Length: 256
Image (tube, rainbow, N blue to C red):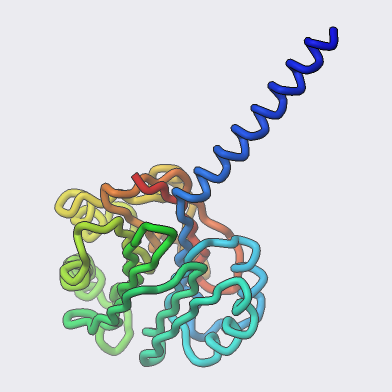
């Protein structure tokens, strides 16, 4: 009887060690990223609690500005020791909040669309991971108005935008391209990323229905996270939170 009790105690401890090892392994080999167009005009402090609760390793924001920066730096500096902002015009601002060091940063001028993009490389333990934060041109005219020609040509513009951005990336690294693409899962640029560049769309794997954008009665899936073949998406979801016209989109990836 005593021998049986010792055996059970031994097995219980072995299982506990194995479970702890498994949890450490998963944490060490995965990374979570959030993309969120906060909307330049919907400034509010609720974003601090939203981002804090989602707890992504890296947060990529679009449409930030100086007021957004003030709120985010004050509210999240303890959670994210590496915070950078780039302001651009009214709606072209970008932000990066990271738990891991940013070892490379390339701010990319947009030659064909409206807004710049931002490529960074972070260092997580021994792994370097490349992230492209982008905000592609909306289907509007140069004056920001609705126009059929601008709407139907937007897909081609998006391809040209992404093509110039991706050219500066290192193809040897695990890479994620994310942001507000201003087109759905079946858009021309998304098809180009899948068919021509071999990227996989995270959200469409786990959720084919949830919308990431809303405006009055309109809805769309305009926000995306795509990854190259050096990463495996193990989870993606939309958080229906916040006051922006967009919702936060989270992806969790395992390094192959």
